[in-house]
Every structure is written in C-alpha cells, then in structure tokens.
Image (cartoon, rainbow, N blue to C red; front, side):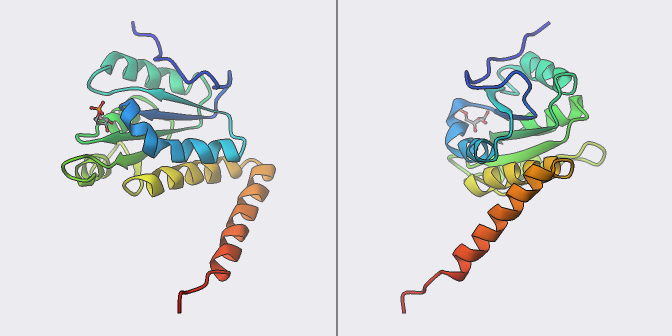
Length: 173
Ligand code: RP5
C-alpha cells in the first residue's frame, strides 16, 4: 500500500484542484496553472507524481482523489506522457491533461500521448506548454464556477480585463 506523495507546503487541508506533474522539471510549465488557481483563491495542491517512477503512488493518488474531495485534477507530463491517462483510468474525477514540451520532440510526443486516449476513458487535453497549463487552470475554474457565484463573477471580470487589454493594443506602425 502506497502513501500519497508529498504536496507543496502551502497546500490547504481540503484542496478542490490537484495539480500533478511527472517531474520537478515540469514545474516551469505547470506553475502557470498554479499561479492562476492562486490568483482565483482556489484551494489547490501541487505534487510530483511520476507515472513510471512512482506507479504505486500514482494509483494511491487517483484512488484517494475522489474521497479527498478533489473536483478536478490537472496533470502535466512530457515525453511518453501516461500520467494523465493512468490517473483517469483510476478515478472518476475529471482529468485535464497538459502536454509538457520535451527536449527532442518539443512536446508533440507529449501531446499525442495525452490526446490519443482510446474510447472509454477521457482526458481533456490542452495545448503544449505554458498556454495549456494556464488554460487547464481556467477550465477547472470554469467548472467550479458552475456552482460558485463568486467565482463566476471573478471569471467574468478576468475575461473583461482581457478584452480591454486587447482593445488597447497598439501596432508599431
Ligand atoms: C516525464 O519525463 C516528466 O513529466 C518530464 O516531462 C519528463 C522528463 O523528466 P525528468 O527527466 O526531467 O525528471 O516523466
């Protein structure tokens, strides 16, 4: 029986979103998800859960995700990125997959590994890299906002600010 891998020290007792990644080397990408969850005051945790180096821990994390109250898992991995798919196979909690850019194939390998789940066990797959990590967090926030009016209002403001920033853009001509 495996125990849960250690979380970051700032994690709350009752996280709603779990952010997991295959290696600490994924942090530079996955921090973009964590930053948005922090910005929106979403209780969350972040852990390294390597599918091929910690398979028992992966199973423990997936099995305990629902009972611990996680509403959504954001899973980032690179290369033969089986972490999101294996988590999805072991939990009913929705899994959002983030392909991390790999050194040799620039993350196309990660993208194909995550997005090409066979029928029956879905992983919602996002763009390679920073944008994918950020959008996975925003998607998780949208899911939580369905049942949280405060969060819905916050998301509305976030979108409105983006619109204003785009309208204010100037071209160098
Ligand atoms: C995957 O292998 C990780 O998700 C990471 O993207 C990649 C490389 O890991 P390290 O060799 O940097 O630990 O498991």
